[in-house]
Length: 232
Image (tube, rainbow, N blue to C red):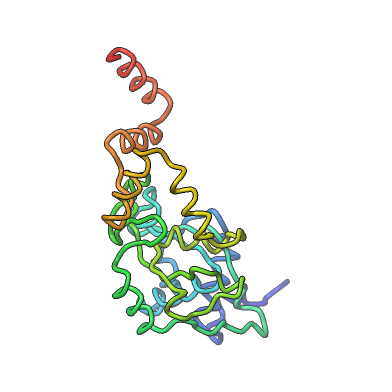
């Protein structure tokens, strides 16, 4: 009979390791759980919140109701399990950006994502109930030699930041971008100029309706199609 105590039950090891081991072995990727469950393992509420944030720094993707509209306020969702921090010899990566440097980037560029243009705290047009949360991203990724210097940092929403981490294409060529801008039609150039002027992409009424239409189930979309056909 195996009487070995699971790591997540062993109060002799750190709280972060216990939380991570429990989520990896008892919950798993693609599953929901309640934060109250973790408080049984780590009774200190503040400590549980801190451990959750720490895991996000090492590759874990844990969503809450602000990121995933289908979740209830007390629910969390494991989208991806990251580093196995409970393993012997694991070393946490050093924090690259200080709070002061993050604040300088936001003060310089403003509280909006420099990738998609959404204001932090605003709701995504194509994700009802999900609001943009601020992070700091690298213009040239560190994997391609980018640094933590201020001129290589920009504000990004959490979604764009996660997408950017997985990109392997080379950075934007400014001369190529200029040529492509000149290739646009007059109305497209005017639209781009407007977005640049206000510092973010704006959505027309038709674009917003299209986004909402795509979020409907099949039968409801058919009703909308019939309505539109009758009006034409």
